[in-house]
Length: 170
Length: 60
Image (tube, rainbow over all chains, first blue to last red; front, side, top):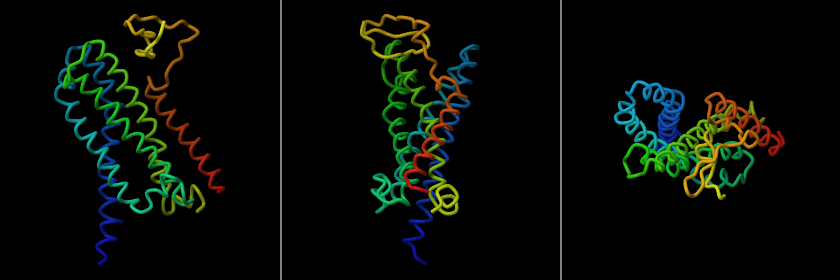
């Protein structure tokens, strides 16, 4: 058995997909479920249950799953990393677009969403005004990631095998 | 008046002093990311645009 190929084409890809499902699954949970649930919970004063017990745990898995997804993706690309990111070879252009979208999303998670969520959840000190701004910034970054996830997932799927032939004829 | 940004966009613009100026009817543009459907449609449109750009770039 070729263990190098098994790890590279099997385990790394499996880890990439597992972590990716957790990342995007939680992203969709925040956008499709929690935003509306919080609005309803604030109306009957039960929001603390979500902000104190659910959101911090969801954010923990969310941000680390994002990082693991990106790192596993980078190891899959390995010596073709620059081919993809710099669009150096035609065959790596579709995965390159997906990789760039994933990278922008990772940036949004760690640079925009998480620091602002720390203010919102009271993990770091913030005034009410700062919290309001943080709430809006985190919300827009999260919604931007939801929108970006659609083309990102498309290009991840359309970058290999029968899908690449179907969508790009190569 | 200098504006920090459009936060919060629905209420108006916030100055450096924290003063809120409501949007006039002319300058108020709804952000598609404020609604879930707007977000999904934006994602779908972006997918189509990027797909055609890549397809054209690859000459396929």
